[in-house]
Each structure stands twice: as structure tokens, then as C-alpha cells.
Picture (cartoon, rainbow, N blue to C red):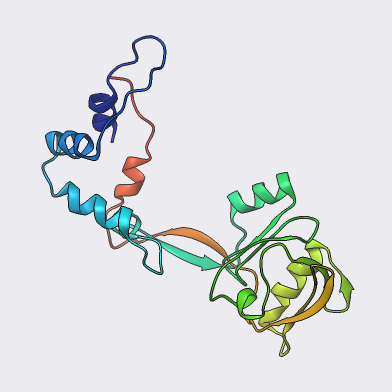
Length: 194
């Protein structure tokens, strides 16, 4: 990647300028560094609309994506800054600090319960909404036999939604696959000035 950037962009030479390029320019530069079928490689990734993120680079780099109940540091920091809760990996929701649903992942438990963006959560079970109550309800889903009950305001109408979910709070993490070389670790090493 460093070789590509050095060749493609060249050294800085004064003020920034707009310099257009084409897809073929990118392919030509990549092939000059390491001959490969870069056109198909990039087209596959740019045009794909598969159900999952392309994880080949991570798994080929000696790592795997796992989900568990350990808080994700980046999501925790973002929450500390904005107050929003990212429950994408559990019930498929992103909820602002005031209870407004910012995003819903299609096919996940929140969407299946009828929740959608711009609804505002006003209650969790029989308690008034707070991020802590929502955390508690999702976390206790692992030992509860009932649904997570969400009371939401939707354009002036109060609605009750029952989320069927048993996985608790989950976050994404990278886990080292010890049976494969750690190429990703090598790539992320600090650069040494040449």
C-alpha cells in the first residue's frame, strides 16, 4: 500500500490540487507494483452486495471476526462521547441518547419486532427509557424467558414492540488465528523512515 501511494500520488509538491484519475490508472499502478488480476479483484469488492462484509482480508491476514459480551473499545468510546448506544451486533439497533432510533439492521431482532428509524423509545419493559435500562434488558435476555419489551413513540402513536432475542450484549472483536501467519499484524507495524 505504501508503494502504491508513493507511486500513484507522488511526493508532496506544494499546495494541494485536484488531480483526476480513472479506474484503469489505479489498475495500471497496482500491476506495476505486483502483477495480478486487480481489475476483477477490485470489481468483486466494489460491486458486491452480499449479505456479509467481505472478510477475506482479515481471515487471510491471520485473524477472524468474533462477537462476544466483552465491550468493544471503539464503540464504548463513541458512546462516551455521544451517549448513543450501538446494539448492531445484538438486536440490530443504534439508539441516540434521547431514545430516538437512528438505525435498524434489516432481518435482525429489532427490525423483526417492528422497530424502525426515527421511532423514539420511551420505555423499556415497565421502566422509563434510559440507555442503562436498554443495556440491562438486552443483557438479561440471556437468562430471561420473555421478550424485551420496547415502548416507542411513532409519529404521535405509542406502540409496544416485543423483541425476541436471547444473546445478551454483543460486540465485534478481532481474534488472532494462531494457525495462520499474522500478516495483518505485520501490516499494522509502525513504519520506519527510509
